[in-house]
Image 1 (cartoon, helix red, strand yellow):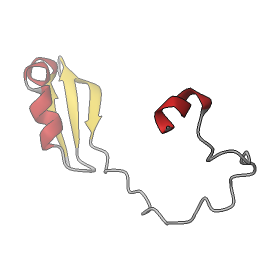
Image 2 (image 1 turned 180 degrees about the vertical axis):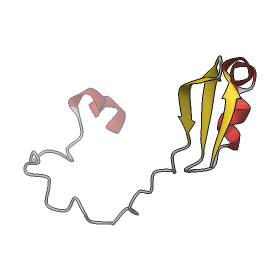
Image 3 (image 1 turned 135 degrees about the vertical axis):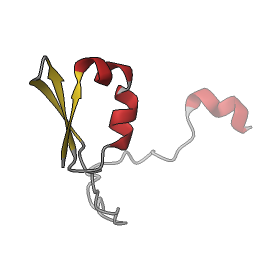
Length: 78
């Protein structure tokens, strides 16, 4: 469905126009009875759900002292 609105009217209530748009709906903005812009609502992006374990095996190297306490914090560990 397409509706038409003037530039002046669109300027005064642009936020409401955007908020009322349904996915796939469009609003034609006109100036002197000529279309100058089209405002189209896009559907929200559908992301695949996260899957545990998808990055398993991607760490290629880990230092042998990875879990060792840092020298900077040695005095706090005592």
